[in-house]
Length: 194
Image (cartoon, rainbow, N blue to C red):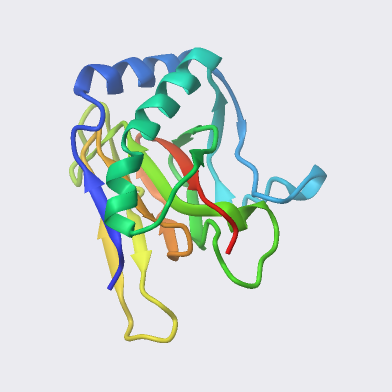
């Protein structure tokens, strides 16, 4: 079983459109990998997407909304959460992806990711199997079951405005986008190191 929660309507359609427009005006650069610096920070064979530098007020507004949902997530996952990391605003274009990975809270890793307890993804753009203006194809969010259990793969394409939250140690990926732009915001709720 994969433990996750979907909160539809976390953002309304107007807020999603406003954030997409704002992202379209912001400067972007290739997204990096946690814990890597210099030439090793960007690894396009692992993660290919663009991260945008949004105004501080936008980041603060999204963080505030995430913190407002903290009690519901604490109740769902049965853990105490302390804070949120600064949100990352991401655009996946045709060919972009992120291989299967975990975001943190894994027992053998002792970097900053050990404080990540719950991962959060906010979906801002519309998925569509058929080509349509303003939509994207491919780019599914896929959960993978535990290595020790039966094979499990759960593919999701949440509606714009949906918050998807899951334990940071859950293996997941973003499949390659086949057309359009997949726009999301990601953050991590932190807790005490265990």
